Amino acid sequence: MIEFILASLAGIAAGSIGAVVLQQTALKSKAAAILREAEKEGEALKKEKMLQSKERYLELKEKHEQRSSEREAKIREQHGQLKEAQQEHNKRGEEVRRQEKELSRLEESYTRKLEGMQSKESQLDKTLQQQLQKLESLAGITAEQAKEEMIMAVKAQAKHEASSYIQTALEEAKMTANQEAKKIVIQTIQRIATEQANENAVSVFHIENDDMKGRIIGREGRNIRAIEAATGVEIVVDDTPEAIILSCFDPVRREIARLSLHRLVTDGRIHPARIEEVVEKVTKSIEDEVAELGKRTAIELGIHGLHPELMRMVGRMKYRSSYGQNLLAHSKEVAKLSAVMASELGLNPKAAKRAGLLHDIGKVPFEETDLPHALLGMQWAEKYGEKPDICNAIGAHHDEIEMTSLLSPIIQVCDAISGARPGARRQLAESYMQRLKDLEQMALGFNGVNKAFAIHAGRELRVMVESDRVSDTQASTIAFDISQKIQNEMTYPGQVRVTVIRETRATSIAK
Image: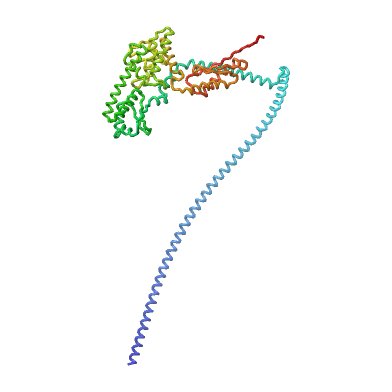
């Protein structure tokens, strides 16, 4: 039994060993096959990599050759350019050398000529000095003294001639430009006086509190639109405390708007229907007042037969101002002055008074127009049956047309007297007095001036000079210099005439 077991174990061991051997043999054969396969794949991969390396080598070689050829071509091109530049440089160098030789030759020639001229100049200087010495010995004064005397004489003569020429030119310019200048000044004053237009086109309506502004504006602005539509006046409601601005070029419409607002605010009922009712009543009241005022003015001045429309225009003057001067007061003043002047000249004072009252009716037009107020007033006077001499006086008082009657210059002069006198129009008395003082002080700053007086409301400056220090010729020059200084340094209306007075007084005392 034991033997059988041992034999069995030996058989099992022998079988196991045989199986192991067989397994090892199979593994060896499989490993050899894998090795052979790997060797084949390695050979194939080797061949493939070698082919890729060759292709890459050929590609790089081709690029290198191409770059080399391009570089060689560029080098050849640059070499050619350098060669051309060198040839051009050589040509320029030859040209420069040729020019240097020519310059050297010219310099030598000029040097020789300069030396000859210097020698001649020295000879001329010697000759001139000899001649000057002979002249000085004959004249008894030196050349410097003679030069100074000649310069002083030429200066004095030139200054005198220049002053005379300037005075003549100014007189000619005044004669030729006077009429045109008047027209330009008048048109400018009438149409482009911005400051006066702003001041005379605006009224301020005062209210007790700012809550009233909301009621005047109304819901969505319907009340203020109704007021503007009814009166033709622009209502400006801004942040100004307790005030509303009324803006319009027509003073009558502005007055209607002001009175209407006053009635509406006092009454407290402010709505579109009430606004239209109040404006209509105020308009009728103002028209009646204007007509009544024109009638009273005509009666006051003793003017009869005036057309009702002309009376209305006279009444409208109450609400119009010209440079701060009420137009109705100005017209009444011109009428009275014209009557006095006409009486002194033996003319009809009633006609002069009539023309004086109506001379500015063109300043209260019912609608906008491009005509100057003098021509517009003349057209209205003709339309409403005024006589030709009255119409001409109205139209010619600013030289818009030619004067054909003796009334015309009277009206023009009286208009100037009323408007130009100190204090009549917008000008503070302090500034007016200061301007007169400045005129006098400016004249006193000139040499030889003894006294200076501003007369005729600053339109003329009379200057007294010392006769022993100022000659007649110098007096004319001083007058011109003062006028130029006034023109350049001062602001003034119209013209300022400068009159220089020189007189000689001989005084002797008997003992």
